[in-house]
Image (cartoon, rainbow, N blue to C red; front, side, top):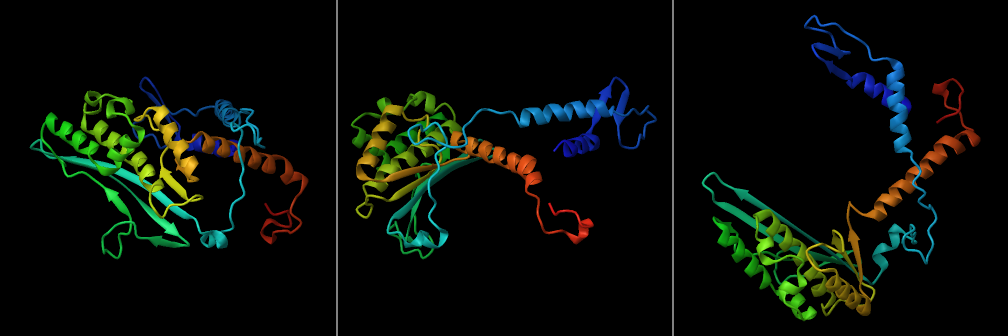
Length: 297
């Protein structure tokens, strides 16, 4: 790793000091040229490697009673995945807006879900479209020309069927359930659309749990965290408890997960151990003819 960092620094280095430019490229302006000392490059590379390989004392082997340690579960063999009688739902959403030169803006958010059962996608909507089998919700108010239109989008959002059922399930008003006030949510278009998408995705969890065909053991995959900031935590916990009572498992799929960070760190430590220690203790016995008889890497 040190060698690659040094090579990269050699290629990219460009230092400016007053009117003197230090650069490995050809000097076209007649300015004096000076090489960065190898000792300085070595020192920088050593510092980078030290920080990259810092030991954070994260245990590689988890403990079942301590959920803060990495938990490893058996993975179903790929050829047996479709043999399960469980249903697998996946929730996702998005939002977008486009503003034109005359001040007119088109804005929309949407969220929906699909379902797979025994390797086949199941139709979740009432349409006869042969391609679109999932179910989605989106607003009718998509035109924005002034601030009042943001409030209209918010009011319509509260009347979407999944959102209404979520509030009924929690037996609370929107002001109690949501972490932010209406005025804060409608401050700007991006904040409003992001809020609507996140809450609608959570509302779809409840809708899926209550579907007649959903049974204990089914999975719901959600693109994002299970504790978004738009809804107060006590109500998210209540929804999670209800899912647990019904035997439905909810799984978050997210890039910014502490679990993923710990796993990435663990795999890196294992790789470093294999490359730096075991590689030399257990060399390959087969030789590579292109390396003049040396052990293959």
